Length: 91
Image (cartoon, rainbow, N blue to C red; front, side, top):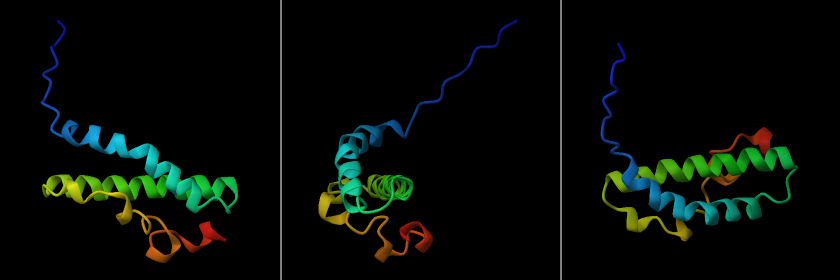
């Protein structure tokens, strides 16, 4: 007998569209910010910026403050100055 899978409603889907709409700009900004690094380090840092932006966006969404997720708040996400990037990755 084959059991039927009960699907739970996906509560997280509500924030996906908003973040995905912002993602190309986040990636473009991060690539530009780390363009001076070697390709491997740059890719690591771009991925870190995306992860940090996602966590921040989800928190804002959960608090009902997603309107605060705009470009001027991105510059320090994943930058060496913010303390979120390992020093070895920037060397």
